[in-house]
Length: 232
Image (cartoon, rainbow, N blue to C red; front, side):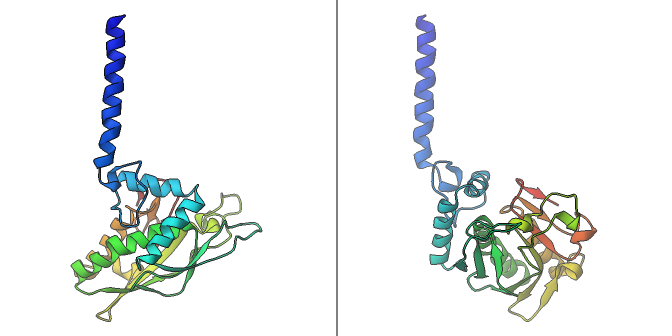
């Protein structure tokens, strides 16, 4: 009996010590620390992003923080009803210094993940590989009340809940424009930066689908919130 009691006491002390260590972990590795828009995309960060999908209030608090830091400009929109209702979506206007081909409607998690991706990875990658700042992201839409691939019997697309953005190309300060359709298989810096931009998106979205996924994605990156790290 004494041995059993000692084992239980030891386990409790170990658990308490482990819990105390969380206080000293960097936020991106601490599951108890609130998410910051500057947290690098560790597994813990991605878990927190996923969790925000079920906590609109918490998600908006972090998104507003990103806005205050200049990572994103957006307008809050009213919830919508109908066949594809939206719960408090936002209209994304730009990501800091990076403009958009047009504003787009997004769920809070999509807007936040996109701001983190552009700020932490896309803009730095453009400068590092291409030697020129990223100035504009071109896209072909986010919200659309439809099923996957427009099939009548299929489940609803992520676009039906404004949880996905289809990116078609990028513009840079040196005047160059690279589209997914033509740039994906290019050699040299143009192809390298395009593939790096896609690969790094996988760290921030539930799924990133590109030209290697299927023919339907030959001309765009589908960046969506469902799943956990699907990258093809």
